[in-house]
Image (cartoon, rainbow, N blue to C red; front, side, top):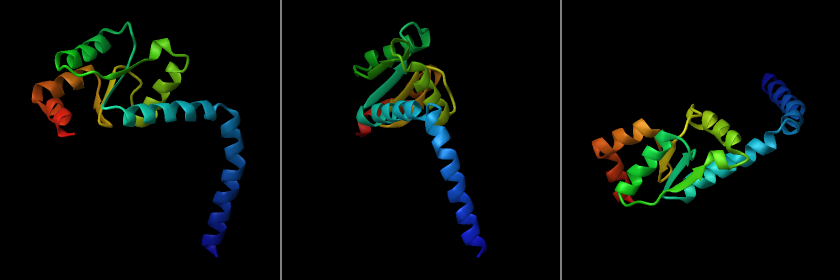
Length: 129
């Protein structure tokens, strides 16, 4: 009986809260989230960047030196760039750029990428698939 009450409580709560979520811009964040997920998993290498950011330029240069062509998304050139950074906060706990993904695996920012190159982890990951 307690389980039935608990499930009814959850159902009623969801029915009450869900409409407000969608009224307050959740659809836009779902769209940004879907874009991020698609970009990460549809490309071998994905870099979320800002065109003026020196750390982003450094990350992109790493792949040029490795003769790799990443899929680069310049957030400052997109209307939904700020929303995409909000998705990062939910996904990886950071809003900063660059954010680098290889074969869907989060590598991290510029310093993380440099460390992965130094250790050989990045090269190994690029050769693995």
